[in-house]
Amino acid sequence: MTTLALALVLAQAVAPAAAPLPSDPIEADWRAIPDDELMVITLGTGKQVVIRLAAAYAPAHIGNVRALARARWWDGTSVYRVQENWVTQWGDESEKKPLPTGITDAPAAEFEIAAFAPAVRMARADGYSTASGITAEGWPVASDGKAAWLTHCYGMVGVARDALPSTGSGSELFTPIGQSARRLDRNYTVVGRIVEGMQYLSALPRSDAAMGMYATVAERVPIVSVRLASDLVPAERPHFQYRAADNARFAAAVRRREQAEAPTVPTGAAVCDVLPAVRRRP
Amino acid sequence: MTTLALALVLAQAVAPAAAPLPSDPIEADWRAIPDDELMVITLGTGKQVVIRLAAAYAPAHIGNVRALARARWWDGTSVYRVQENWVTQWGDESEKKPLPTGITDAPAAEFEIAAFAPAVRMARADGYSTASGITAEGWPVASDGKAAWLTHCYGMVGVARDALPSTGSGSELFTPIGQSARRLDRNYTVVGRIVEGMQYLSALPRSDAAMGMYATVAERVPIVSVRLASDLVPAERPHFQYRAADNARFAAAVRRREQAEAPTVPTGAAVCDVLPAVRRRP
Image 1 (cartoon, each protein chain N blue to C red):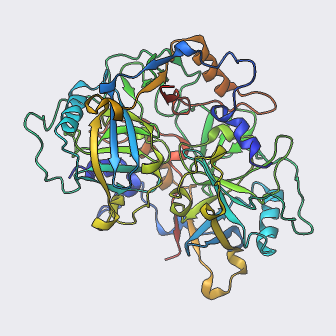
Image 2: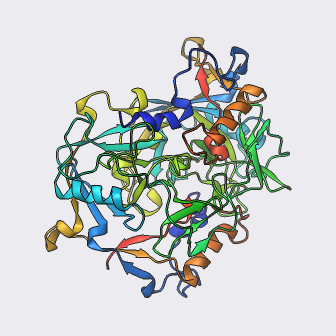
Image 3: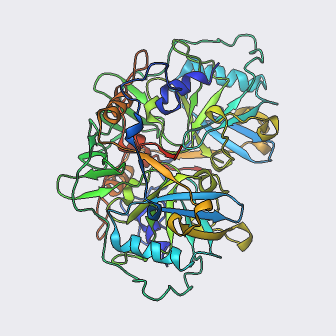
């Protein structure tokens, strides 16, 4: 079975062994994501994308994002940009739709975060930072020994913006769909991570037009609605849990990924390889 | 224009300035890729994918790949696996199609290469290696100070295989379609890089079935033909050029990517971020 070995290398895809491994989570490692830190995008295709908001890190921009969802501002907008090996972007393609009253058009920069405080550190530096790791709550962070920031891994959600010093309002959002986009670190605001439905943004047809902007209205994917889970009626409200990183199990999982197991030759790992799992509440 | 700034960070997307930059290639930097190092996959969708073979590095596996193409072995096979944030894989899904006479089913391992000899080195180590860079011919390589290997960047082509010590015949190939798959480095054989048409493999619907294997025949994308460019009639033969890395222009381009330009805050780069451009011969 030629495909099997590829999976063996991918620890996340390995079925749990009969006896738990030191790197397996225990039930207490799964912690609830608050309803107002989950945002559900319903696409015209009928598919849904769920974003976990990085609420502790970018309060001004996430305040905007929540206010835009509550104002139903994104309803009727679209996914309008899909650039090969770069990003999928959504919001108001015309950039002319007025923002709701009270939305700050250009919040102060939140490209960096207050402190570098990972629960688990990667063993090695990488091309973009001298240290990186995963916070207790599961966010990927990096530092150069002075500043700290969230990293633009595949599936993270960033705020598109005009040229600096613009920081963007949060109305236009993007997610990296190829090679990680870490060269955007410290230059764009990270507001979350896609925790379900990423394939409905990553597998869209690429545009050959400039910057991957869809050239025709027909190519765009309509956005039917964007809602905070906390604003959905209970019957429609999804519940998610993240795997906490503040424990020996998760640390063992990171070390296992970095060191591999014979006969596989260990080649290390980078922070974007070890984002903790997120699941629907069982 | 909220989308503009995102492009400014992406040096490759910036239109050439009126005056050439020190990082711009000159005409002599574009060098021909030999016809027998190009392989053209024609999909049932009518789209084509072009692979540049890493002919200098994995002679046994690339010998197999060429022999399979010349035997038209892939004609009538399919793209049968598309796993979200992992790989697209193609060949004979049943793994029962007999290989042509003379194909070595299990060549000796070519997971590593003979020497670490980049023309341009990345400024920093990364999570997977102590040194990395781009060879004169444009291939991404890494080293731990002892061994050297080609890296599994987005769009590189690897050989799927059974459990070790299998090395795979080369009949089943894959390409990373998400976060780079560098944890496969030194454990799988890299045989090439997709230089055109990657979007026809990266934007395919993901499968929710185990390991991203398409669960039904209808989901698979038929492969009409796979041919070496050298075996195509002249009228159908594509011609490609790679940007050579053995010059000050390319070195400047790498440094520019690593260091960024004010007001952008520099965040460095990794080897998979700086793969040299490949183009059709003008």
